View 1 (spheres, rainbow, N blue to C red):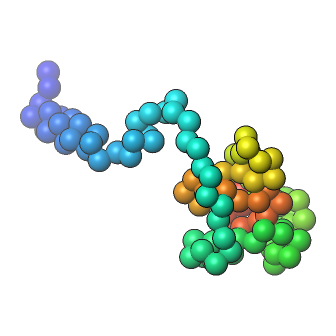
View 2 (cartoon, one colour; view 1 turned 90 degrees about the vertical axis):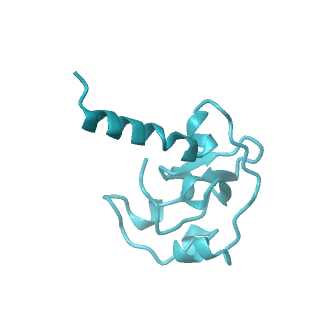
Length: 109
């Protein structure tokens, strides 16, 4: 038996569906990211993004030495099909980053 409280909670949750981004609703759709992030972008500055990881001031993180931390081996990085040197980063909202780069949001795969 459904209580009034359960009905109201369920109805409220269903009312949020129109507010979800289209990308969340279409899981199978391919997102094509073509914009390359620049180092002067506010998000890049906040995450201390740098295109050459050897120039970054970083420390060992999650059991991985600083020298082994690159965008290309980060959990948020996806290789771009058009250019192997660049890839999509989920932290930078569907913008491309250099695979040899680094940022403070780096997390191992």
